Amino acid sequence: MPRSEEESEKETERAGDTPVPEAFVFDLGNVLISWDRERPFRELLPDPDERQRFFTEILPMQWNLDLDAGRDWDEAIAERQRAHPEYAEAIAAYRDRWSEMMGPDDTAMVGLLDRLRRAGHRIFALTNWSAETFPRAEAAFDWIGWFDGLVVSGHEGITKPDPEIYLLLADRHGLVPERTWFTDDSERNVRTALNLGFQGVVFEGYRSVLEDLRSRGVAI
Image 1 (cartoon, helix red, strand yellow):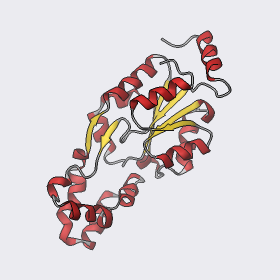
Image 2 (tube, one colour):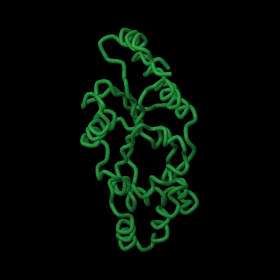
Image 3 (spheres, rainbow, N blue to C red):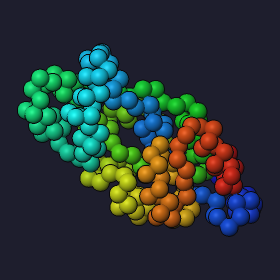
Image 4 (cartoon, helix red, strand yellow):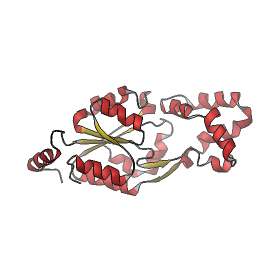
């Protein structure tokens, strides 16, 4: 049930000078959904040294981040295949077997989302995710539909930790940073949020998030 005015006032008193968060923003990958891009490649490239070289020199994380920012998959894969024809099949598999990179969701964190929304809080997602592959996540996890709003980097052409994507989320959904809480598994992404006035914590597991929220006066 939505909180009463009296309950909100009590929460504010418990939190001291810092306002109790009124909106809650979650990263998705490795916060709510396990994601490991090497997962399908342990079969395709079983040698650990070769696999490390593949992900360091041929498809580094910046290449994946470019896809998250909206780079065209056809162009990105073709360019890498031209540069490394000996790995053409493995490069193609990055797209063809992308769904295998997703693991299960974190049931404790999904339960936390559910409790927040049932308590009347607004919940949002801010994620670095390719526009092409995000529908696969939506199809796999029904709870993505619970969010009051989503900002997906691939749709916006901007990725975290660019401050613009945080401000876009706030402007689009009428969020006040000082009353909005954010969690992400990337310290750099959380630092940007804090610098913009958001409350937040680096994600280190369900228990640490729960303790952080309670320390801010969130009744959950």
